Amino acid sequence: MGKKIFIGVAWPYANGRLHLGHLAGAYLPADILARYHRMKGNSIIMVSGSDSHGTPIALQAEKEGVSPKELFHRYHRLFLSVWDQFAISFDLYTHTDTENHHQVSQQMFCRLRKKGFVVPGEQEQMYSPTAQRFLPDRYVVGTCPRCGYERARGDQCEQCGALLEPTQLINPRSLVDGSVPVVRKTLHYFLDLPAFQDRLKEFVRSRESVWRTNVYRFTLNYIEQGLQPRPITRDLDWGIPVPEEGFQGKVLYVWFEAVIGYLSATLEWSHHVAPSPSQWKDLWQSYWYDPSVLSYYFIGKDNIPFHTLIWPALLMGAEVLYEGDSGTFVLPYDVPANEFLNLEGDKFSTSRNWAVWADEVAERYEPDAFRYYLTAIAPETGDTEFTWFDFVRKNNDELVGQWGNLVHRVLSFTQNNFEGQVPDPGLTAASLESFLSERAVFLTEVAQLIESCRFRRALSEIQDQVRILNRFWDEQQPWHLIRSDRQKASAVVYAALCWIDTLKLAFSPILPRTSERLHQMLGNSGGLLGSVRRHDYEDRQGRHTVLLYEPPRDLVPWEVKDLPVGQRLGKIAPLFAKLDHSLVGQERSRLGLPPL
Image (tube, rainbow, N blue to C red; front, side):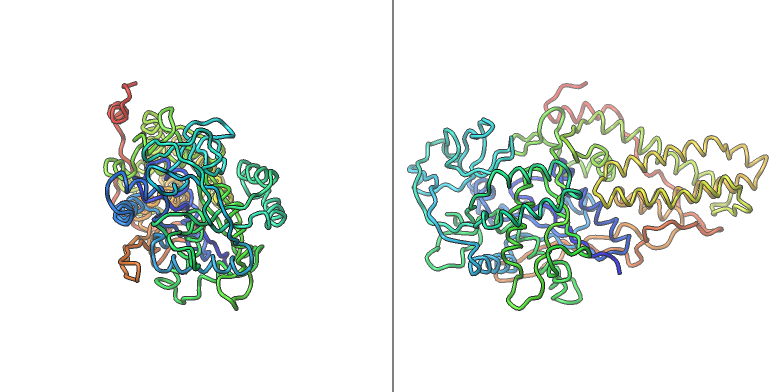
């Protein structure tokens, strides 16, 4: 039996377009892990969805003069297109305004309320005398009391990552009209986070050898400062209603119900795709530390405490979703949060329009080229930098010049000298047998790096092997051997083709579309890419469009194989296109930057 793998990916607010910082931060690394585990034969589900509620959507809708529902549906449709363009293989990509998500979120609230972990209490909150209403946290900005950042939000400081309350801000002001709010009391529900202090500390310490150092230290430091109760309801008319009498006009706080989306999406997947509606329990209902079930959560560093502390607390507190369910919820195995990807010396910013928009570049370039580059510069342990100059250089030097050129040289040579068929190596020289046997070791090393979410290092190992194979081809000089020793030339070509087939396998989680094309060029059966399809359905919340991933019927396994002698190659074509350096100036101009 293979492992059971759950991959949850951050839910993007449906209030603006997706940029390459979003892809690099969570979605691309999650897809690499998902594609690898499917090839390993593990039982896997990867879910996410558009975050439909909360103040970011309400704020943007106010600015545009449209309803929050209209706004989120517009961007949700755009998100579906981006995932398709970049081959992000969600088993289900949904959103948080479905009847299913409303019900699961309210059920979790009721479970925690019944068990005493959710309690009512008064809270001091910002009130706008000019608008005559309470201001949700993101409607208030001010100076962070911890780091002094002057545009900290009322829920969190983007500069230092501190979780905040609007009343903690220095010099607070309304984001809507700039007026100074006043403090008034209002009744809300709170998560009794201090009740989980000891259990969370024990849980976090058990993750030290798995979590990245930045994630582990940030979380442990947060606990040691002393956990405080967190409000889980808000005075807002856009969201999931609080299922309690006397709380009309209040909704579940978006941070509370959004993380529940990982669970509700799995239930939705079970009802629409899985053979059994109860299959979601295989990934969720076991016990807290189940080594056969591994749950990964891919997020940006600004979401760390929500996934390493608050979400585990909700799972600990609820234990099960429904009375009578066996076991307890499985806690996160790994939270491989990435740092930030910066753009040409400055942080990606949707509000300042400082971004490379994912939907735009997918129309102008090969998306696999961006998957390669974003993996090569992945901000896994620290902030990294996207520059157009470096993107073009890596595309031309590494994708085209090393990998693409190697594939074209070897396959074209085979086409021209062996009638387009995999040649018989005959009695292969011992040195070539040893060279071929190294493929299994190589594939194992890459697998270990992917499983530990070290995708940047895995890509580096693959590229090192590409350089080794290029050197092998040049040193063997088959273009001379074909005239002096055809049998040895056959062995060299055979070894090169088998290595290319193995490298194709290693590349496929990172470069799924071009690896699929190469798979066909080598004359192989089965597939690597799979496909996504849109699924429409209707419930009491309205009509919904979600995205579903369908793997190939005959998915190529993650294992070394020898190409069959005599197998006929498919049509040979370049894998990648060389980019003209003039586009660096063009793309910098789009950002308002001078040419280099």
